[in-house]
Image (cartoon, rainbow, N blue to C red; front, side, top):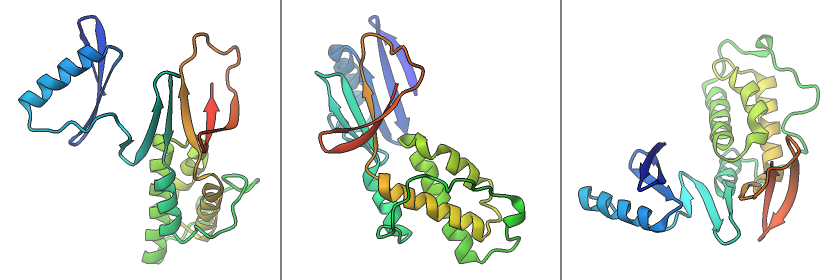
Length: 200
């Protein structure tokens, strides 16, 4: 993320390899910067952002809200690991689950090891973008990526079962004029057919 002040307005640039997102409150400043950027570098303008690095973005500018979702990526993960038709779980981890080093296998089967690493890596991508509810589970599973055992795999598959029931959850960023007087409030609501979690 790069930040600059131009004519009193803050311009934000997010970059990943050759993909950029430009953001600024003032449209004229944004357009002028974009024009100069495209004149100097061989690039294209794709318009308002709808997807970025697999994250779907739905904006309602008049209402001051943006919805971020990775439901298509989550569905791909579930289908890749053959968990799309599983019975969904209500929690990311089974209550009372304790993963330990003693449950590890010092020489896991390569296919087993590859599958476990793939699941954990996919969960990490979700956690970093739109699914903070998976953070603790991902943290626990990632401790055993090098030497995973059956107990670790069972826990990973349980997380995928939870993901199956919540794959279409998203994060809503809503502009508010006043701060909430509560430290943390989590609600599940429906917005234009999306299922998302609000954290304020």
